[in-house]
Image (tube, rainbow, N blue to C red):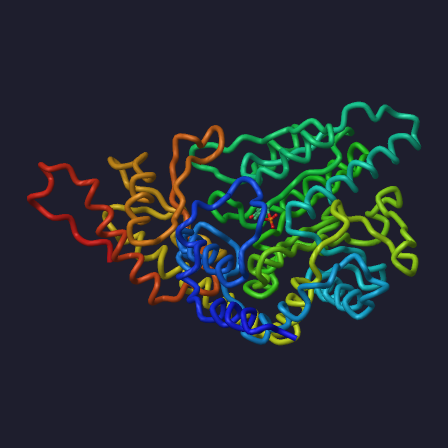
Length: 457
Ligand SMILES: *Cc1c(COP(=O)(O)O)cnc(C)c1O
């Protein structure tokens, strides 16, 4: 039973407004744990308010990552946040759902129907790429050992346009990285140069579908042809791993006839980010193998301490099941038609934006008619090189548009990049164009200011 004093104290606490507590005037112990905690309302409000200093995800055009999902998807996510994906015996339906998504993706990517569908969910494309390449390294070692050949010097051939995770793989897993450099007018892989770097120690060749730098695509079909020819001539089979982080969810809907996936004989593994154009919040990615024989048994662990024997071949053990479930929600809810409609809108808007830039006097798109909803653009001469200033000016309006130099041999070119995500509407792009126009005025030197250049749009 509560005494009167207790009652009075309780009431007082209840009546103290959130911003009336001492926590709003104390210095926060931000780097060391304080002895005493704080009440939940204050902790929430302090953190919530501080996070207002972050950029606005909707205006973050730098990111490929999904910033909006339907309320029903959000509901499923919050209902399932407690589930650990690895506990498949405790959560058998979640496990089933993961398998269904893998099957759907395998079919979207044209994996042979008569083969064992093989794949896994990951935290994102990075984990999927590391795992996929590890599989190729293991398989190469296995094949070499079987023939009594050296396994000392594995190498990986990629274009200079690959994401940093490809370099990470080489450094973490001791593989020589052979980079086909870009050039001043080519920002994707050159097939002939790549072929000249391929030898019997090549564990795989990487190809990107939608590069991080310009959103362009490596010539995968031509690469496949050359590797087939190499196989016929020299007798060693070099697989292709396709980095479809963004393109993997785009091409099957935007251009189903375009051949880049398991329809090509050397494409043995593909990664795709669920949290990019898979339209799920971060983090979920997927790794698909053409068939079970592309995943060496060496990489598969069987554990029995979760209730039943399970197979695992992820780098991380525990991960959140909610985003895998959210992926399934999207696939079920949208169907092919839904994805097609949303992604076609993204592409239409990207082309609209690139077209406007093409007509402007200050900017020039790398590709005036992009194949994917990613628009990289530069300043027209003589302003080239000042893209960082434009990025800083746009920031004043709240936009996050990155500016960076392209990789080696193309590093004299700076670009700005806009990822036209689901949430980036025509209306938003119109505003962005207006703000680009205002931002570009910093480029005019005072002597030029007398005769105004025509506006961007
Ligand atoms: C985003 C991206 C990655 C990394 O993927 P995450 O899902 O962020 O781990 C790798 N490659 C390409 C081409 C990308 O666009």
